[in-house]
Amino acid sequence: MSITLKQIAELAGVHKSTVDKVIHNRPGVSEAKRQQIRKLLEEYGYESNPLAKALNYQKKKMTVAVVMPVVDAMPFLKKGMELVKQDFNSFNVEVVYNEMPFSDAAGQAACLKNLVKSGVSGVVLLPIESPVVSEAMTELETAGIPVVTVNSDLEHAPRLCYVGQNMEQSGRVAARLISLWMPEGGELGIVSSRNMSSIKQREHAFRQHLPACTGNIEVVDIIDISETPEDAYQKTMELLERRPSLQALFITCGMVSDICRAVRDKGLAGKLTIVCYEKYPVIAKLVENKEIACTLSGDLAEQGRLAMRLLFENLIYERKPEREIFYTKNEILFRENISSEKI
Image 1: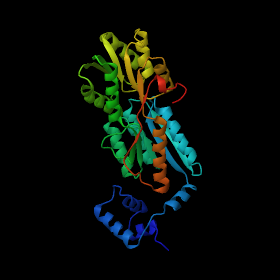
Image 2 (image 1 turned 90 degrees about the vertical axis):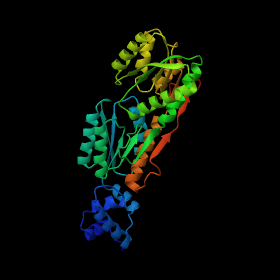
Image 3 (image 1 turned 45 degrees about the vertical axis):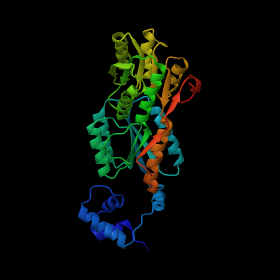
Image 4 (image 1 turned 120 degrees about the vertical axis):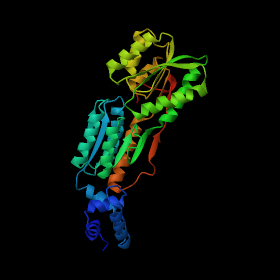
């Protein structure tokens, strides 16, 4: 009969969770103890049994937490996640959604730390850009709780993998599109936000690549919004009043409908070239009405589906993702290939 994880732990004089950390190369074990446990694993030929673990999850309850700020992308990410949950109906898995305001990094960090204490099995996270969130992610890793980041990543923070749009590529594509609409050059404004790494990456890539596309377009103003309807509308109105000669807007963040409402109220609908992201029904309608020139979709439902599937497969079957970053496709959508009836 093969040796069990519990027996290896007894031989090493440690708790079986310590052996599990060594097996999965997680932190929290001294190097001397790690070497001792590895020697025992090799000596006794221990092999974990993913199938037995999967069958065990059919009996005991597993809790997966989804943690994300309240943003436009949230319902579409959820839609993809729920598809995966249906695929694993035979397992006793509970998915708990935790939401907080877009700017509440402290609240997100506190939520993640509470999940460590509650003994959650794994986390799908749309991280707010903040050191306190990175710190909380480190606590999850130390506790042996896998995290999959979705839609936006957090540089240097530990996670199992990231699933989302290639932000660098999408920013460069947006720069090329703007240059095609403005061959003679002109003034451009950017509407952005500072709370998400993905948004910052889009803006940086756009500004870096724009000179290579054309030397005649000048970025004359950049505004940062807090991703609330009131703030997005008011700051866009102020931008348009401050820069009456603007010819284009590049929107890197959410609240697109409220930004376009300000453009409409200023009598500029259809006169400004606007490029934005995602294909929510409201955005598709604005593209169809020629208020938005085009939008770049990162397939949010697929992001949610893949992030949840990778986490489930890691927890239930002990499958490690084949790579650390999974990009969904960047799709350019115009009036001719978008529908307001679909996401």
